[in-house]
Amino acid sequence: MLKRHVKTLGIAVSLAASVALADSPTSFKSHMEFLASDLLEGRDTGSQGHEIASLYIASQFERLDVKPAVDGSYFQRIEFGQTTLVKDSGHMHVMANGERREFAFGAEMVTWPSSRTEKLELHGDLVFVGYGIDAPWLDYSDYQGLDVEGKIVVALSAKPKQFPSEEGTYYSNQRYNAAADRGAIGWISIGTPEGEARRSFESRSKHVYEPSSFWRDEQGRVGGRDKFLQGGARLSVAASKELFEMAGLDYDAIIAAHETSEPVKGRAMGVTAHIKNESKHSMVTSPNVVGVLEGSDPKLKNEYVLLTAHSDHVGVKDHAEEGEDKIYNGALDNSSGVTTLIEVARMFKESGVRPKRSILFAAVTAEEQGLLGSEYLAKNPVVPIKQIVANVNLDMPILTYDAQNLVAFGVEHSTMDTAIQKGVESQGFNLIPDPLPSANIFARSDQFSFVKEGVPAVFLFMDLTAEGGEGEVGAKAFMAKHYHKVSDDLNLPIDYNLAARFVKANYEIAKNLADQEKAPRWKDESFFKSLDDR
Image (cartoon, rainbow, N blue to C red):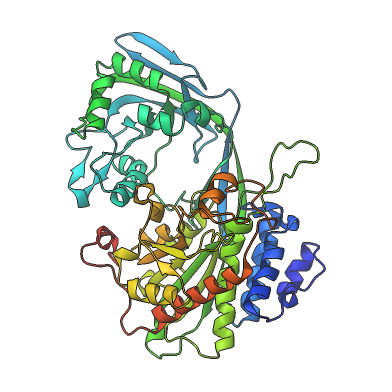
């Protein structure tokens, strides 16, 4: 069946037989040479290259006795919408005390396209809502005493400094939903000096015409939500100051309060805004590839350990000089993670021993679009979400230096810790604490989609501060020089013996989690336990 689909794409090869069972370094390299090849043209979501990669992954699952997990298929098809702003269509003006102020698109403000309509037109009163965050677990809400029904909210593009890193990131990511749930129709993001230093308004503006993506469920709802913001805008620091001045608000005093962790109070602004733009909409489909290895224990086989890795990357450069490499092959991001997933399945097959719990293998799409494929799978699981007891995510294993230390981001939050540590140490790695806690990496890859649905999870990765030796590309150097660049290809000094050890560590972790007596759970003191209402 898979061969027939491959031929429809004009590939006259049998992918199912493309990689013979072999020693792990050789097998790992063979998968990498296909998944990171120019043939796949960067595996952009919805592209033919990504479709070929998905067929390849499914063929490997089939070969390794990992059964289809999606109603008799390996493919969980997702409908993605893409919106692209029409050039020079963005417009915003405000009215206060009879005074009209128009903000210049690109220089002072940018608007973002609506996922619901090609012609956006918003008109409403403005309400300043501080950070726009509602965080019940932290006993905090910016909406107390404020009515935003039918209004456009105005919020700082920051979070309270006193918030713990992970909790703050989680609630910051939920702020648009918090506004929509209270009936707001739009959002204006206020620039801050801190944000400007991290990434300038000018730099952000350069990307305003790039497509943005979203997923629809079977009922056609964007992101599976009934309530939503219709659109919005982002202001530069200078424009933000002027808007606040028109509303009688002291921008500098508000920023000073933010810097010193003082309360930032919201209020109605006495200003109305008109925001409009046009966008072009298109649709693509792209699959998650999901297979299952059924467990051996009559009772525990109804519980699932989920292993994930994203299969997409960022495609091909729009503009490249003649002779310049234009393909973002994504060798380490994330052909190496998908290959690890396949190789773990191979190890289970070759062991001849099925785990007690069942194991789901999922190569998810659209991670580069904002974790969309994993979010869809978490919201539309192939087995009941209550039966998924753990997730181990593999994103961008950096295999280009003599890695001694691994980090399991999120491991401190759940009882997965023992299984993770044993698996890592079984292959001679050290399990070290997060070396960059302020970066909150735990919230920045696909495992977080499942965390939000209550599933204990970890993201197993390298030490991002590692330098690497002569002839190597350490993790720190990879992030600085090769991450999301065309140089992330097979010319990197990939250590396939290291890759084999990394595979074995992941195999041991999966086996430990699947065979342990009690299912993993969040620790009582963890914030993420509050999200588990399963």
